[in-house]
Image (cartoon, rainbow, N blue to C red; front, side, top):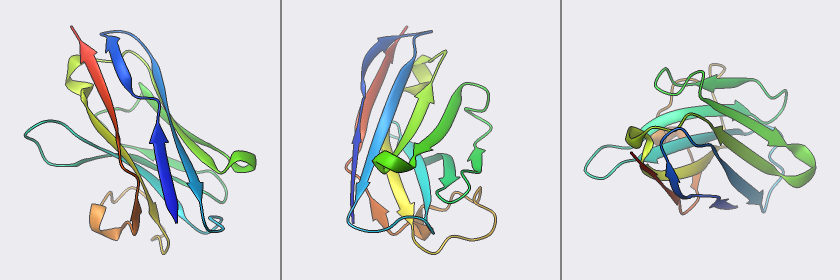
Length: 126
């Protein structure tokens, strides 16, 4: 399994950005795909998740209303659309795959995720 996150960059506060996570190496229909982020000096934070089959999503309270997770089955790609970015959104963003997900996808426990991408840096200037 390979996960390749991309789309990060330097933006100003209030801007939008869309991250992509291209998944390969397996059929992901039973998986849950998660987004996490880690700011400098802080612990990894759960951003949200999407169940590949059915597309139901969960977004953490810290990003709800500003970030939206979606997926494109034809491209085996998961997206994180971010709007109204704030300086506190600055972090390395990771996508991850849970091959045996629970019924509730909002637990956000990083240890439940089996595969991780390398991360993409998002920097939001004030």
